[in-house]
Amino acid sequence: MGNGVSNLLEVISRIETYDREDSIFAKKPWTEESSCVVLAELESGGVPLIAQELGLAYFLEVDIVARFKEDVQSGKVAGTWDVSAICQRIIYLAIYDA
View 1 (cartoon, one colour):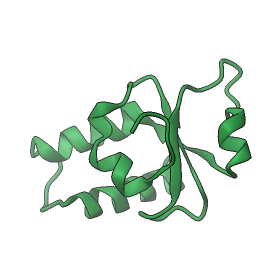
View 2: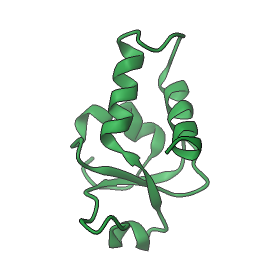
View 3: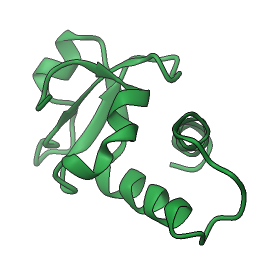
C-alpha cells in the first residue's frame, strides 16, 4: 500500500513490509481504526507536510513496532496475541511509554 492512508490495525498487521527507518503518523485519539500513513521523518524531526495536512500526529517509529511484534511472535512476550491485541498494546506504548 506504500504511503497511502490506511489504519493502525492494517499497518501493524503488515509492519514488516515497511522501511524500519520510517515512522507512523496517525490521527488522534489513537485506536485500531485511526487513519495513518507511514513516512520518512523529516531531518528536523517534525511532522511531514502530508501528515500535517491529514491532521495526523507522530505515533511511533516502524522499527519500534516491528521489534515488539517480533518479540511477541518469537514468544519473548508471554501471552496469547492476535493482531488486535498487538495493536492495542502498541497504542498503549505510544501513549504512555513513548
